[in-house]
Length: 113
Length: 115
Image (tube, rainbow over all chains, first blue to last red; front, side, top):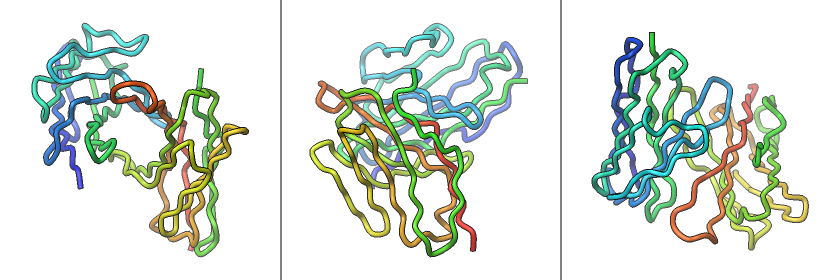
């Protein structure tokens, strides 16, 4: 079946630094990659939708300059949290849309200290 | 505006019995519904889906029922097993629209199967 590899699985960073999260579709081409965020005991909230080779579409309330998304190829999408603050601490998950439907990465636990 | 709602944050069921997880939605444009299982610090794992043209879909121990008039769907797990203990999310999308469609998730229900 389809696999989306997401790295790192967890990261701790200092406030003000940037963190990059990678998602790779290993055995399918993900024309579209969705990025979600989940706060403790809450639902997965869509942050943005990225299509290969074009700019990402951000959901209302998500700062595009803070959460930089790059989808340069059909197998790789990245999310960079710039100038991270403690309130950005969350669980970030990507999902690729391919012939097998929606396939989720394993998630990245970001802690900003 | 919570378009997909799971009103039960938790559910506890005896092993071997039936687990019933419920989900309600408000957006009549949704035409595809999915259930996911999620363990802590992991991504969601797809369980079962249903298109709005159906009212039931079955896969092994998992059955999803869709009541379009009530905008309600449910996931039945029978018999329930200890390994089913996890958080279950229902999700909905409007696939009739062009291009890949985003999923809207409910808040999740934590299912605990007691031995």
